[in-house]
Length: 82
Image (cartoon, rainbow, N blue to C red; front, side, top):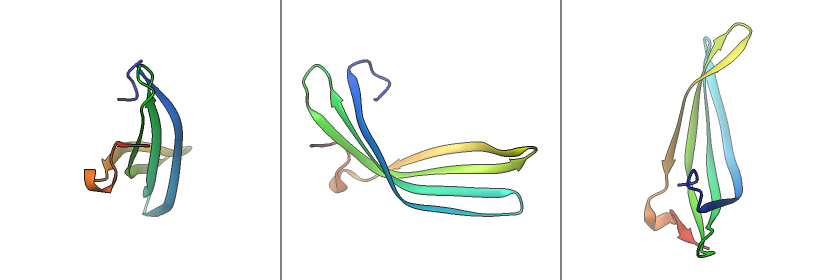
């Protein structure tokens, strides 16, 4: 949705960051809260959930091998109007 020209990003917040790893592999997980606005109506929404990055150690550093987002269920406020 945020790739839509009719949506303006207002803020992105993260919390509960956790990084775990061993033997050249790591996983970074955190909660997100993204506020955005529909430009044609001015209606604001909040999307919340968890995102996870999977990383692999490679010379000279780390490579992101995948990124995923898991939105909270609607009853927890997914795309809730602000």
